Length: 193
Image 1 (tube, rainbow, N blue to C red):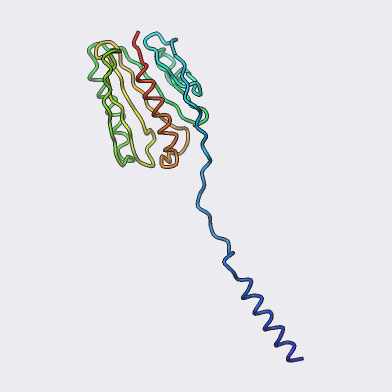
Image 2: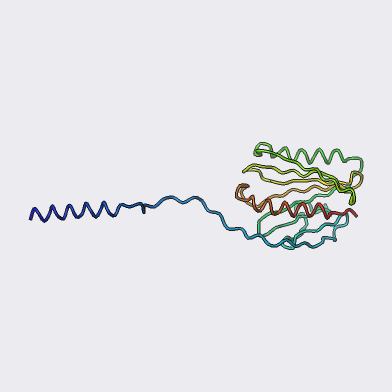
């Protein structure tokens, strides 16, 4: 009987040893949803009284609900990406430097989260469009892209890209890059009225 108990104990120890393989559960890294980016196609926004431009067909134009008295303000919304480009427009009347200063101040509000701010000069002499585009790098930056455009005498437009979600720009980088191409197209096709 004692031999049988010893044999069973040995068999039990061997089964436990064999069953302890590398199949132990391990925590998995956080996954992100796959982002399907639509094909680039554009339509013209020609209903605004002061300007027109082309925007992507997968975006919608809505009024700025926070400033309904500003008829020249609009939002370019990207519902699939939960993103919006907020566009504000001001008539220039010897106050261009104030508008440029205000744009710069809006950029500086993101400095504490930004790891870097790059800018790109816009010069389109044919359409009389000049300005700057700011690219704000950093995981917690609320607005990764902002810009202003002007003709220096009558028109001033400011734009900023925001996402309606917690800023995690590392994982959103493909979408930010994709919408940046749309902003470049908007700027290239902008015409003052």
